Amino acid sequence: MSIAVTRQDDVVIRFAGDSGDGMQITGNQFTDTTAKVGNDLATFPDFPAEIRAPAGTRAGVSGFQIRFSSTDIHTAGDIPDVLVAMNAAALIMNYKDVAPGGIIIANTGNFTERDLQKAKLATNPLEDGTLDGYRVIAIDINARVTEALAGSPLTSKDVLRCKNFYVLGLMYWLYSRPIEPTLEWLAAKFAKKPELADANRTALRAGYNSGDIHEVFQGRYEVVPVENAIPGTYRNIMGNHALALGLVTGAELANLKLFLGSYPITPATDILQHLAELKEFGVITCQMEDEIAGICTAIGASYAGLLGCTTTSGPGLALKTEAMGLAVMTELPLIIVDVQRAGPSTGLPTKVEQADLLQSLFGRNSDAPLPVLACATAADAFDCAVEACRIAVQYMTPVILLSDNYIANGAEPWRLPEMDKLPRFPAAQVTDPAGYAPYARDGKLARPWAVPGTPGLEHRIGGLEKENITGNVSHNPENHQLMSEIRRDKVLGVRDTIPTPEASGPREADLLVVGWGSTYGAIRSGTERLRREQNVSVAHLHLRHLWPLPYGLDEIFARYKQILVPELNMGQLSRLLQGEYPDHRFLHFGKVKGKPFTAREIREKITAVLEGKS
Image 1 (cartoon, helix red, strand yellow):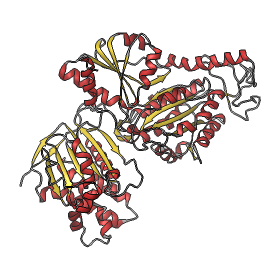
Image 2 (spheres, one colour; image 1 turned 135 degrees about the horizontal axis):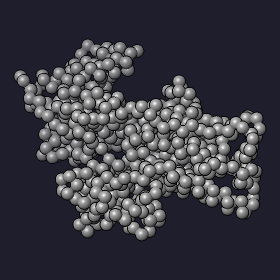
Image 3 (cartoon, helix red, strand yellow; image 1 turned 180 degrees about the horizontal axis):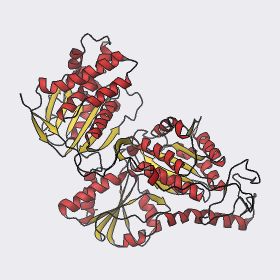
Image 4 (cartoon, helix red, strand yellow; image 1 turned 135 degrees about the vertical axis):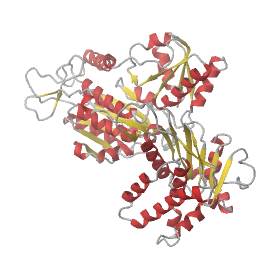
C-alpha cells in the first residue's frame, strides 16, 4: 500500500522513559541524523534530578526533546507534536505538554499493574479517558523487540535494552529520516561487542519496517532541509563541546597553550572530558581533588605562562571564590567557566537556572572586580569562550564565563569558523629586563606578564596588596586606594573593546525585552512572533557582556516606553540594571522551576505588560 507523505515545516518530538531506557542516546541519534538531513534544530535533554531513582517511578523519568524545522528556529519548542512514552511514569509526567490532537506513542509493555503502582496511578491512563483529545498509538514495544531478536545470544534483559532503537527506527520511518547514520554509529560504538551491535541494528530496522508492516500510521511526514542557509561546513554541536573548542581556539589565537585544572561536577564535567581528548593541540588537563585545587592549579599555570582555565557548576563556584581574589590581586589571565544549575547548595544538579549572576559579579571579599560574560546558545558558547580568552589575555585579569545546563546539553547546527579569519590577540609576555617593573601598566592598564625563570624579570607575587609599579608588598593606605582604583578602571576599560548590542526589532517601541544567557531563544522567538502575527510594538536586546556593561545602554533604554527583564532567577539582572540605570524602570519576570522559559510564556507576559495587567 502506498503511504502518503505530508510536508511539515516544524516538528517537536519528546522521547520520555526511565533513566535506563536510553532516551538520551535515542534523542542524540535522532538529532545527529536530523542535522545530516539539513534541518535547523534545537534540543532540550531533561535528566532526572535524583541519581539512581527507582526504575519506573516519576522521579526516574528522563526526557529528550528535539525541534527540527525547514526554517531558522531559536528554541527546542514549547509544545511537543509527538510524545514517545516508554512507561506509565513517563506518560503521566509528560502528556499534558503535548499539543491538543498530538500523537502519543505508548509502550504498553510497561503498563502492567506493577508499573502503574510505581507511577502512583490508580487507573491505567491508556484506558480511563486521560488521553482523550490525543491520538494514541499503543504498541507493546517490549514484545515487538523480543520477537525481532528471537534467537539472539543476549539475555532477555539485554534484549529489552534494545527497545529504544526500535522506537528510533519507527520515528525515522514516520519522519522520513535515513537509518544509515545510526547503523554506522552502532558499528563504531559496539565494535568490540558485535552481538550488541547486531541486536541494536536489528531492533532499529524492525522499528523502521514496522511503520509499513503494522500500518499504525495513516501517513508519513517530511521536513525538508533549510533553504538559503549561509554557505559553509556545518556540524551538530552541544554547548559544553562548543565551549571546550572555543577555549582551545582562544588559546591558539593568544599563541598560548591551554591548561585546565578542574574538579568534575554536573553539568560542567563534559568540558573537562572534551578538553582531555585534545592533547594534540597542546591542551593540558588536570582532574584535581577539589574545586580549590582546580582553580589554584589554573592560576599557577597562568603564572607559568600558560592560559589557565577552570570549570565548575553550582556550589563549586563558591569554593573557588578565595582563589578568584588571588587571581584579581596577582593580575594574571584566568578563565573561570560556571555552567549554572538550579538551586543553592547541591540544589537540582540536572536542572537549569541562571542564578549565579550576582555571585559572579560580587561574590568575593573586598573589591575584586572582574569581567563577566554569558553564552546565549550552544553555538554561541564557542564565540563566548574565545571572547573570554581575549579579555583575560589583553587585560591580564580573571574572567567569569557563564553558561547553564540548558546550553551545556542542548544542541544545534554550528557553522565551522575559518580559523585564519578569526582575529588574533597574541599574548605579550615580556622577556626584556630593560625597564621592567612587575606592576607597570600598558594602555589597557594591564601589567606585564613575566614568566618565572626569565633572567632579569624576578618579581614578587601573591595575595597581599602590591605596591604600584614595583609589586612589592605594601600596607600603605594611599597605595591601596590607588591600586583598588586601577583594578576597577582596568575592568571597566574592557568596555572600550566590546560593541554596543543592537536591539532586534523596532528602534523605538512600546516595550523592550532585555535578556541574557539561555533565555535568548525564547525571547527572540516570542518577540518575533508577536511582531509578525500581531503587529505588537516590541523589541529584544540581548546582553553578552554583563560586567562591565557595554556603552550606549542608557540611550537604548530611553527609546522604549517599558522594559521587561525575563530571567531564570528571582531578579538578578533587573536589580543590576536598576542600580546602574536608575532613570529607567525594569520589570522583572522570573522563573525558578528548573525549566527554561518557553516562547509562549514570554509572549503571554509581554501581552500582560502591554495591557497593564502586570
